[in-house]
Image 1 (cartoon, rainbow, N blue to C red):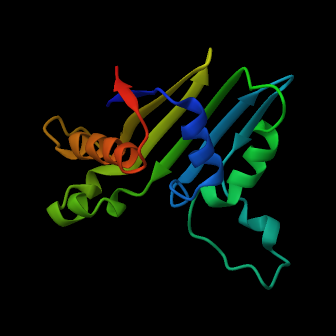
Image 2 (cartoon, one colour; image 1 turned 90 degrees about the vertical axis):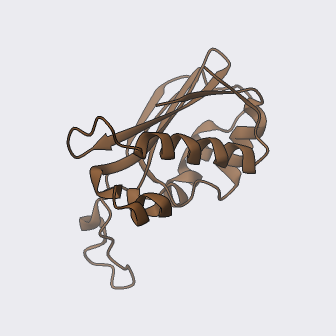
Length: 161
């Protein structure tokens, strides 16, 4: 597990809310605190579409960030910066090609990014939801490397804390 403190909050949030970099993640949860606090449970409710013949059913437990990004953007935008925000995003371990090829992607249920904005500071923390106890697994290191690479590829400056 690694924590990255983003040094340019505005640039990251612009990429997060307006870009497509995180679109292949699922959103587990979001909390946005402005005048009131709004909590979003990212569980997909397929029964909502039971009478919609144009909807293609999803096998995913959570809705994608791509689907929920506009809603979150509407909640965040405005003249005043939110007091607090938290987003929990997850990715399927098989999406890390190195992990899949090495055969240790099955050790995890999800690769997680926790994004927290508080007191004008933005932190991104990696985590893994393991299926069991794997003390010598290289997966945490690979996930940390992936997250750091994601930030670097998008020219986002950070400090590791």
